[in-house]
Image 1 (cartoon, one colour):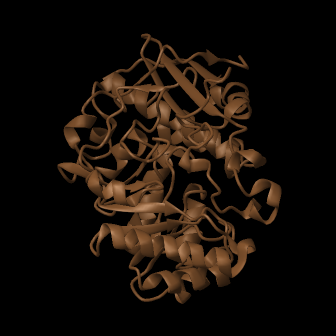
Image 2 (cartoon, rainbow, N blue to C red; image 1 turned 135 degrees about the horizontal axis):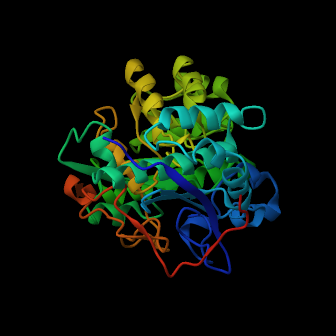
Length: 398
């Protein structure tokens, strides 16, 4: 069966005070839990300790990629990357797509990656590649009139189950989630007093949620091996399920040591800020963690996530993607080694379930009582649409 070829590739950002939320989920208003004295590697500087936005976590903004076929069908995706990523998509990557069969996604990915390898390999370049790849999968699904998960092999279970990331695991339990992951509020620079507060918070939450509810700590690259080891052991008696992204993501040797140091039964997880099969091969071959957590909008897109997942499956390691809404749901539902999904609580007080990529996406499914039926994903492509009320700006054209 012949399909129309790719006609146009376009890249947009959102400006004018409309960038908060969506793919740039860190860009939130004052008082939101996601930007409230969370431990970071910048915490060593007092002026950047209270807010992640103070050191620029929100400077890039959302990237929106559109891929239009000859017949007018448009696939799209959102991730982070802002204007720098727009430049890459328009001025570099578009040449590998326009005039091509959209189903040649392997060749397109390969050419984008190796064509930019001399200045890319990770970071914002792979973010841009991820956005293009996700838009391509959305286009393919729309051309075939089937959801992305069908094209990935079909569902291996009838529903997704979720844990919640947010400031209130006790409320997440009431909402039906299987676990709650807290941000770590105090890093090494705050000394023993900060460590004590971290442990006290887990103890308090354990008393509120009971024994069977999962509790995890998201450390967002803020710790060193010694501090992470002490934190893990002090929280062990309160049933901490895992310690996540505790140290510098480039310190594979540190993660290897932390996994050895962790108390029996506690998992070490990481990978949110890792990218491509080669980065994850390091984590897996060096036995750095128990669960890898690639973000499909940052690691290389669906095309690369499939390769990463296959590597992990061969090693017996679970793949639980970083929260990225429908872009990860379509993957998780098709893989046995991805048994549950993350849901970011985007309500400012983490007190109710709200769409993760609001206001940019329309039709975004959300969990009900911590679960989501596979039928919620049955629309073509990723099953969502761009909100026409969110104004897009195209900073570059080709």
